[in-house]
Image 1 (tube, rainbow, N blue to C red):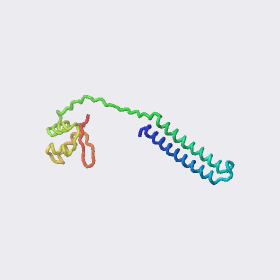
Image 2: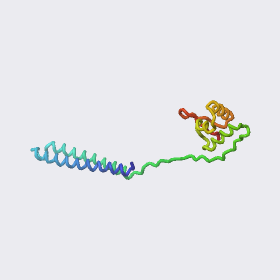
Image 3: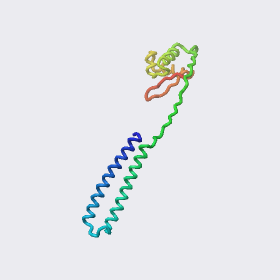
Image 4: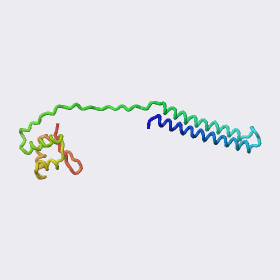
Length: 159
C-alpha cells in the first residue's frame, strides 16, 4: 500500500477512537454527576479527568502517526540492472566434425542455441545410444554442454 493510503487509514482509526472516547467520557460524566454526592471534591471527578486526558493523548498520538505516514516520502528502491553486451558470435570451426555432429550443431543453432536432448534425437532420427555417444563427442570437443532439467537434458551450445 502507498503511504497516503496507510496514513489515511490510521487517521480514520484515530478519528473513530476519538468519537468513542468522546461518547464514553460524556456518558461517564453523566453517570458521575448523577451518582456522586460530594460535588467537585469527589475522587471520581479526578479519576475521570485523568482518564479523559490519557485517552485524548492516545488519540493525538494515533493521529500524529497517521499524519506522519501520510506525508512522509516512501523509500525509493534503487534497482541496478547489469546489461550484458551482446558479443558477436564467434564462428565455430565445424571442419573436424562428421556429418551427424554438424547436423546436430546446426539444429541446436536453429532452435536458439539450446534444445532438449529428446527433441534433437527425434530431429536427427537416431536412437538413444547413438545420441548419447554423439553428444559425448561434441562435449569432449567443447562444442556443447548438457544441463540436467528434471528427467531431461538440455543441450546448449558453448559460446
